[in-house]
Length: 312
Image (cartoon, rainbow, N blue to C red; front, side, top):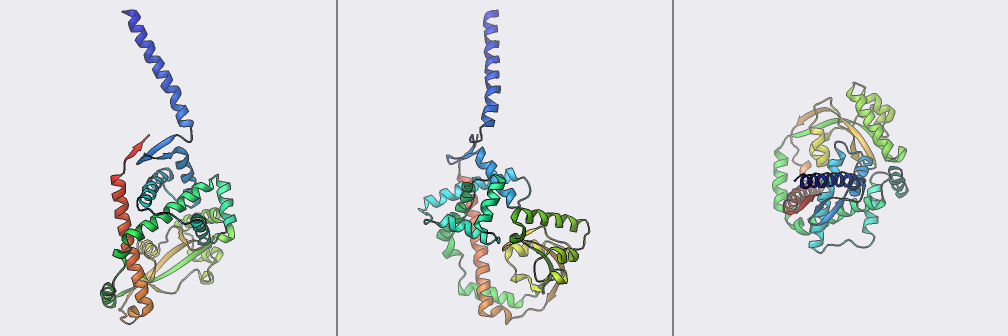
């Protein structure tokens, strides 16, 4: 009996030792699967790389959690494109990366330098861009016809706008182009300026010192603008502020900016201004963007709900 019991104890100890030895080995393997999404593997290396990329792009919060979320979504986006037979033409990814750089005031050499300094593989960047391009094609294929406003939709929207008092925003900006310092240093400076403003530093004085916009001399003060004329994401962030508050660094074409809301003023509607060809086309694009974004978000949640996601 003692011999049998001793053998069981020995077997248990051996099993425990093997498990204890094997666990660090698995953890130390950067290419070990972290999860699968419909049998498509996401490795620990994928997550580490995406985390570095998010950090380089100035993302905040739990970057590891955000990386896992994005990679999971990317897998179902790519799979949705494959199911629809969507492929990208040759050179599309390189063009997408180049567009990504140009929109931030960078050259491809700048991008490659940032990737090298941060230890980010170019393939990580390519995958990031590819999933976005494919998803754009997926949404266009599935929802473009439904999302495009009809003339009747526009007439109705314009009639509402013509009766609605306009919100005129008085704002100030600190615009920081990537071209001067490079993206990582620019994002770092923007975060430092935001911290100074939060501690009571003068927004206007910092704008005069650091902003590279034509408004710098007057402390970053911008001409009044109707809230409806702002891009939707930008408008949402600004309208969450109370007068006197400033946004965190926000991406703009070729750099980042901090925006201070000085005041909001309600003015009477201008029926003529909202029914010009330019205003009509702008409203069409606003309605289309909002609709296709809503369709896309709902479709993405549907795909994620149907996906078999297995944590390793």
